[in-house]
Length: 182
Image (cartoon, rainbow, N blue to C red):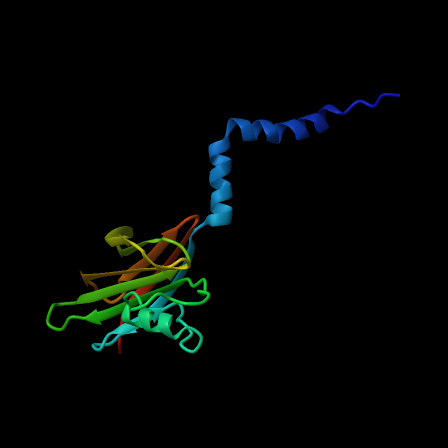
Protein backbone atom coordinates (compact mmCIF):
# COMPACT_ATOMS: atom_id res chain seq x y z
CA UNK A 1 0.00 0.00 0.00
CA UNK A 2 1.52 3.27 -1.14
CA UNK A 3 0.75 6.47 0.63
CA UNK A 4 0.64 9.65 -1.32
CA UNK A 5 1.87 12.87 0.13
CA UNK A 6 -0.89 15.45 0.09
CA UNK A 7 -0.25 18.40 -2.21
CA UNK A 8 -0.44 20.83 0.70
CA UNK A 9 2.32 18.98 2.57
CA UNK A 10 4.46 19.03 -0.56
CA UNK A 11 3.98 22.78 -1.01
CA UNK A 12 4.75 23.46 2.66
CA UNK A 13 7.97 21.47 2.31
CA UNK A 14 9.10 22.87 -1.05
CA UNK A 15 7.97 26.53 -0.75
CA UNK A 16 10.53 27.66 1.91
CA UNK A 17 13.33 26.04 -0.11
CA UNK A 18 12.23 27.89 -3.24
CA UNK A 19 12.00 31.15 -1.33
CA UNK A 20 15.51 30.64 -0.02
CA UNK A 21 16.80 30.06 -3.54
CA UNK A 22 14.99 33.00 -5.07
CA UNK A 23 15.57 35.60 -2.33
CA UNK A 24 18.89 34.90 -0.58
CA UNK A 25 19.79 38.55 -0.03
CA UNK A 26 16.69 39.37 2.00
CA UNK A 27 16.95 36.18 4.05
CA UNK A 28 20.63 36.84 4.71
CA UNK A 29 19.81 40.42 5.72
CA UNK A 30 17.05 39.19 8.05
CA UNK A 31 19.43 36.69 9.67
CA UNK A 32 22.13 39.35 10.02
CA UNK A 33 19.76 41.80 11.73
CA UNK A 34 18.37 39.07 13.96
CA UNK A 35 21.75 37.77 15.11
CA UNK A 36 24.14 40.69 14.58
CA UNK A 37 21.94 43.79 14.82
CA UNK A 38 23.40 46.95 16.32
CA UNK A 39 23.31 47.00 20.11
CA UNK A 40 22.08 50.51 21.04
CA UNK A 41 21.84 52.04 24.48
CA UNK A 42 20.78 55.59 25.34
CA UNK A 43 21.81 57.80 28.25
CA UNK A 44 21.43 61.37 29.47
CA UNK A 45 24.37 63.08 31.15
CA UNK A 46 24.42 66.46 32.84
CA UNK A 47 27.37 68.53 31.70
CA UNK A 48 28.53 71.11 34.27
CA UNK A 49 31.28 73.63 33.48
CA UNK A 50 33.85 71.16 34.82
CA UNK A 51 32.78 68.55 32.24
CA UNK A 52 31.25 65.09 32.42
CA UNK A 53 32.09 61.51 31.53
CA UNK A 54 29.87 58.71 30.29
CA UNK A 55 31.22 55.14 30.43
CA UNK A 56 29.71 51.71 29.80
CA UNK A 57 32.19 50.07 32.17
CA UNK A 58 35.73 50.11 33.48
CA UNK A 59 38.76 47.85 33.80
CA UNK A 60 39.23 45.99 37.09
CA UNK A 61 42.28 47.76 38.59
CA UNK A 62 43.07 44.91 40.97
CA UNK A 63 43.07 42.08 38.43
CA UNK A 64 44.44 44.07 35.45
CA UNK A 65 46.47 47.01 36.82
CA UNK A 66 48.53 47.59 33.68
CA UNK A 67 45.48 47.46 31.41
CA UNK A 68 43.52 49.76 33.74
CA UNK A 69 46.34 52.32 33.75
CA UNK A 70 46.57 52.22 29.94
CA UNK A 71 42.78 52.61 29.56
CA UNK A 72 42.73 55.56 31.96
CA UNK A 73 45.67 57.23 30.18
CA UNK A 74 44.20 56.46 26.76
CA UNK A 75 47.47 55.13 25.40
CA UNK A 76 49.19 51.80 24.90
CA UNK A 77 50.81 50.21 27.96
CA UNK A 78 54.56 50.90 28.27
CA UNK A 79 55.33 47.17 28.15
CA UNK A 80 53.44 44.22 26.62
CA UNK A 81 50.45 42.94 28.52
CA UNK A 82 51.22 39.66 30.27
CA UNK A 83 48.68 36.99 31.16
CA UNK A 84 45.23 36.36 29.89
CA UNK A 85 43.42 39.44 28.58
CA UNK A 86 39.79 39.96 29.48
CA UNK A 87 37.42 40.23 26.49
CA UNK A 88 36.25 43.77 27.25
CA UNK A 89 33.73 45.87 25.37
CA UNK A 90 34.08 49.40 26.77
CA UNK A 91 32.90 52.78 25.49
CA UNK A 92 33.59 56.14 27.09
CA UNK A 93 32.77 59.73 26.14
CA UNK A 94 34.33 62.74 27.88
CA UNK A 95 32.58 66.08 27.37
CA UNK A 96 34.37 69.29 28.37
CA UNK A 97 32.69 72.68 27.81
CA UNK A 98 35.00 75.26 26.25
CA UNK A 99 34.39 78.46 28.22
CA UNK A 100 33.67 81.57 26.15
CA UNK A 101 33.01 79.72 22.89
CA UNK A 102 29.22 79.93 22.82
CA UNK A 103 28.43 76.29 23.51
CA UNK A 104 31.41 74.54 21.98
CA UNK A 105 32.50 71.36 23.74
CA UNK A 106 35.58 69.18 23.47
CA UNK A 107 34.49 65.58 22.87
CA UNK A 108 36.81 62.64 23.45
CA UNK A 109 35.63 59.08 22.81
CA UNK A 110 37.57 55.91 23.50
CA UNK A 111 36.67 52.26 23.10
CA UNK A 112 38.17 48.87 23.87
CA UNK A 113 37.22 45.59 22.20
CA UNK A 114 38.53 42.02 21.98
CA UNK A 115 39.19 42.38 18.22
CA UNK A 116 39.85 45.21 15.73
CA UNK A 117 37.11 47.84 15.54
CA UNK A 118 36.25 51.09 13.82
CA UNK A 119 35.24 53.96 16.11
CA UNK A 120 32.91 56.65 14.82
CA UNK A 121 31.69 59.70 16.69
CA UNK A 122 28.45 61.17 15.34
CA UNK A 123 25.92 63.84 16.28
CA UNK A 124 22.23 63.95 15.49
CA UNK A 125 21.41 67.18 13.65
CA UNK A 126 17.86 67.81 12.40
CA UNK A 127 17.04 64.14 12.93
CA UNK A 128 19.97 62.93 10.81
CA UNK A 129 23.24 61.32 11.87
CA UNK A 130 26.26 63.46 11.01
CA UNK A 131 29.74 61.94 11.25
CA UNK A 132 32.11 64.06 13.34
CA UNK A 133 35.22 61.85 13.16
CA UNK A 134 36.20 58.23 12.56
CA UNK A 135 39.24 56.01 13.14
CA UNK A 136 40.43 52.43 13.52
CA UNK A 137 41.71 50.67 16.61
CA UNK A 138 45.27 49.64 17.36
CA UNK A 139 46.21 46.32 18.94
CA UNK A 140 47.51 46.40 22.50
CA UNK A 141 47.52 42.59 22.59
CA UNK A 142 45.84 39.69 20.82
CA UNK A 143 42.56 40.28 22.68
CA UNK A 144 42.75 44.00 23.40
CA UNK A 145 42.14 46.62 20.71
CA UNK A 146 41.85 50.32 21.52
CA UNK A 147 40.72 53.45 19.67
CA UNK A 148 40.50 57.08 20.76
CA UNK A 149 39.15 60.12 18.91
CA UNK A 150 38.61 63.74 19.82
CA UNK A 151 36.82 66.64 18.19
CA UNK A 152 35.42 70.06 19.11
CA UNK A 153 31.69 70.48 18.47
CA UNK A 154 29.09 73.22 18.93
CA UNK A 155 26.44 71.57 21.12
CA UNK A 156 23.22 72.76 22.71
CA UNK A 157 21.47 71.22 25.69
CA UNK A 158 19.70 68.16 24.28
CA UNK A 159 22.31 67.41 21.62
CA UNK A 160 22.79 63.66 21.10
CA UNK A 161 26.32 62.36 20.53
CA UNK A 162 26.71 58.79 19.26
CA UNK A 163 29.77 56.68 20.05
CA UNK A 164 29.69 53.80 17.54
CA UNK A 165 32.04 50.80 17.67
CA UNK A 166 31.94 48.37 14.73
CA UNK A 167 33.93 45.20 14.23
CA UNK A 168 33.57 41.71 12.78
CA UNK A 169 29.81 41.04 12.95
CA UNK A 170 28.98 43.28 15.89
CA UNK A 171 28.19 46.95 16.31
CA UNK A 172 27.59 48.78 19.58
CA UNK A 173 26.31 52.33 19.94
CA UNK A 174 25.87 54.62 22.89
CA UNK A 175 23.53 57.55 22.28
CA UNK A 176 24.49 60.18 24.85
CA UNK A 177 22.20 63.18 25.24
CA UNK A 178 23.99 66.19 26.68
CA UNK A 179 21.91 68.08 29.23
CA UNK A 180 22.97 71.38 30.79
CA UNK A 181 23.63 71.03 34.51
CA UNK A 182 21.12 72.75 36.79
